[in-house]
Structure formats: structure tokens, C-alpha cells
Length: 194
Image (cartoon, one colour):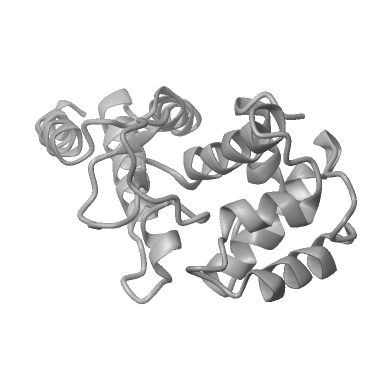
């Protein structure tokens, strides 16, 4: 079905110009999807179908909270540091990532640095740095994360606790936690936490 090749070519050009920083894992997932489809359809048609599926899944609800829209569920502010998976966004205050996995990875790396570099080992210490009192109701934040994660405010956060803490922080930051446990674990693996 060579007639579909121009469509795929156009989609490839549009996709690469709109999403110049697509992660290799995203590209791999498109190829994997195409591979499943290829068994019954022509190769070019399969690639078009996979590209369309990817573009459809890329849509972000404009009414979603800012952190969800930016794939930055921890609402990490702009700094000079450039994170793996960071891409150009239009938010003047907060970073944008190519996928939520990379935004969650950045959260995990920051929290781990709080422990390693700054000696902030306990939940209340980590949250106090993440959400300082001059910008947040830090006490309420600590109480919420403690209740959601099951970790006492003055307890040390162990490596195995990071996914629970991050999930609770995402919920606090965005009023929702739409990501599965698998994605959070994958992000922690990428951050070398688990």
C-alpha cells in the first residue's frame, strides 16, 4: 500500500517539527506499536497508524492542572539546570518535560539530592525544602503527604518509600494523581532510586 507512504512522510515531518525532543523510549514505543500492526497491514500503513495513535495520545486536556499539562507533576520551577527529558514549553515559571515519566524522574532526583547533598533525610525536612513556608502551607503539605504515603512526618524516607511519597506529592501539587504505579516506579528506576 504505497499510497500511504506520503501520509507517513508528512506525519513524520510534522511530528519531528512539533516534538523535536521526543525521547528515544517514545520513538521505540511507536516502533513497537507499528510492529504489532504490521502483522496484518502494509508497513507504511502501520507506521502511519502508529504515528496517529501517538499524536492522539499526546493531546493534553487544557483544563488539566498546570503540572499535568507541563508533564511536570512536581511543579519544578525554571532554573539554570537542564533535566533529562526537559523540553521547551510556554510556561514562564515552571519547567516542561516531554513526558510525565521525565517530570517524575526529576522529582525523584531532587528528593534524593535533598538527602545526599543537604542531609534532609526525614519527610518533614524534605517537604519543607520542596514547599517552603514563604510559598506554601508547608505544615498542611507535610500532613497530607504523611497521611497519603503512610510515612510519619519525622520518619526517615527510605529508597523504597520514594514512589509513595512522590505519588502523594503529585496529588498535593495538582489536586489529583493520574499516573499509575508502574510509571512512578519507572521514573524512580530512571533516577536510580529503586
